[in-house]
Length: 501
Image 1 (tube, rainbow, N blue to C red):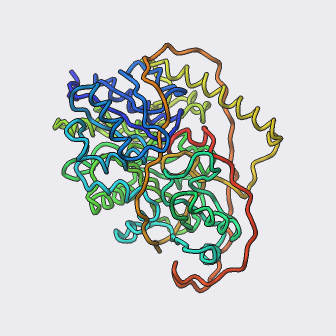
Image 2: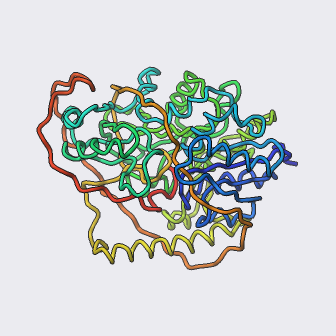
Image 3: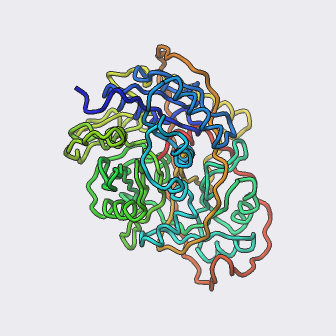
């Protein structure tokens, strides 16, 4: 007999276009295996998720450029089809922000955690997160928000090269603009050129001190804050392998006890009054040993299934149990358990795992998505190679000065940042990033295809010494010398969006 109330279905909402988001499949399987009826509202036309036997129905997502009202209309149509209250689970930042804004409007058709409707938006916004960390005493890289091109150049001199450049609201980045959510900037010129695209990006540019990657420095914490604010399920994890190496999404993660990371997570969510599922990314400073918060995702992280305990409890099941007023079982943490994304770490998927392991795509009781993933991934990689051959870039090695850092809902995570908080002004909320198109479909059978796996690597970055120039704050940065143009950054590829770290 299931611990969950199987009379209450679940609706997974994903606005971001991301065919290889394995976190969505993890949520489908977690709830489906417990007997819950699972509906998916996402662009799944080219996604292995549609092959899962645990998907009850796929629903068309909001159209590209959808407003909050458009998203609400889509969810109401889904609710009308289901015809009974359902637990709504946002699977990306844009969905979490929309759900927060719409909580009162969607009740009683959807069950959502009770918290201030603007809180998911506040923590997902990179500029506001810096302020939140400063107020709560949580280590966070020094962050500056320039108000002019001159301030952008001066901020680079103040922080020291290289510098991390982020858009405060990456879910607003327009498709096809060639803008990445986060990049490593290696000159004042690059920072200025990015700043000049602020209007196009839809949010403000942040510049943060760079914290170098290194062995055992990248950590994450997944948890569920219940109705009382207590953090349940989840736990701290260590990124053993990233794609690209040293600066990317979690290809191999390991459940690793870490009291410091847990204490930071519980303190931050407690002070904010956060309720619901969250995913925090940390980087440990090699010189001070302090854990700096890099990202606060107000929804499940893609590798949340790493933290399935001895009672089978994970953050998604904890949400469903809590919102349906069911008790949460007291399981034992399975320290040492591994999670492997096999299209990024195929050899790790084949090695022995004495303390247990879960694969992102392949599962003996749900073979369709794994088979479909290899077919789709093979075509995807082949297509990208052909594109590069056509434009003459296939043989070019990666440029060592433009590594990408992952952020928010997308996946290539680069090497982020360091140090204490020094932060900026917040940003007003606006339109939510769209979703993609799809039609309601029934789940077809999977196709077998031989695997084709990309081998990606990134070079380790070294950090030059920062300069000790006078800096009077974001609004008082001295003028910088003029700078010339920077060639446009390439558009985000599907594999860069493959999943959230």
